[in-house]
Length: 468
Ligand code: ADP
Image (tube, rainbow, N blue to C red; front, side, top):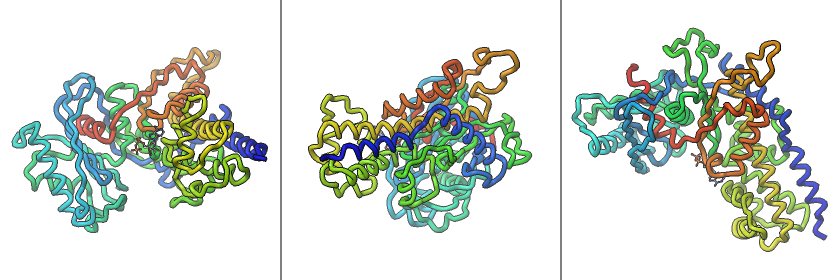
């Protein structure tokens, strides 16, 4: 006996605890909007940090000139150059990538920045005159924990990702780079310090489409930022910008609400993670985790029945089932589910299971991804609601919903989950339609951007060219 009943029971329980009815999603929308408000009201007022970015102007498409960006956030760094012609056009940046020599990651900060400055110098030399008296502008993407103090400055809180440079603690980051550029004799100014890639995504989106109000990244992790009126940023009284607005980095991966549909698998995944009680939204949505939720469900089914044969020891190893593999199984459209069979065999050591069991695996992937995509959609609508772009505001007596003048609204999206995982993308769109209703949803467009952390930073250097 294969104990199908048990397995079907586990599936049913999974489906029930992952339920995302429109009613439930609307509760998540409301919770997101409420938490955003709380995070803006006071420091520590919400699990959403709602960080000020000091980015108070977004590129419009009319920028002109040559702009540079430096993207440092891991073991490689990239230098970029874009030429803007004053009209929106396809951006075709020159990009070069280089590894950072290991000894520089743990040495002195001067050596690291001198190395980077030399690379920049060589890069500039290839295309432009290094001697030119015109100051070149650089957007610096620095993906480490930083306390931002202005659009072009911030203090390092701590190194992560293998870097350990002692003399950098509490130091101003853009200044350290600027000094190295000056030592090198490069006439270049760090005009923007960008510590979060979502901000670059928003800049890039806004360059291409001026109706862009928010940006979302759904890749290994997930985060979002959006354009907020400064008078709504209550925790920072008296904050004034020329534009009257500022980009706020939500750090939405840490969003939490009791309305989120949570399973026993989520609870365990969280408890066994290095950061329990943190990044709860991210753990239900992003590429780092989806495959592992599926692994946990298969493990449970395998333990409770013999439909997957003897329990494979591989099933006990966290993160053996990566999200791209999960996506490949989910999207296997062969009648015999040959991809599913191959992946189960090659990666989980589960050979030769009946078609019925393979179908079950596809179903698990579907449930987990559908929940993730629908929650991401609810998060997006939460942002729109906070800024009055969800079509719910402005209903005056006597007018029906379809009479509302809904402004066209664009959201920039980046990340492989959205761009590479078709089912995820389709479920996200479907949920946007369900939550907003077709009439409103027609006015909300998702635009896909590429490389906010690089190109976006160069564009921010352009839109902040006259400051400081
Ligand atoms: P980043 O690591 O900067 O977020 P990406 O946006 O490319 O970069 O996201 C990478 C993550 O997306 C991977 O960790 C993986 O989990 C997931 N991913 C990559 N390709 C696919 C795919 N084809 N289907 C589903 N998920 C994918």
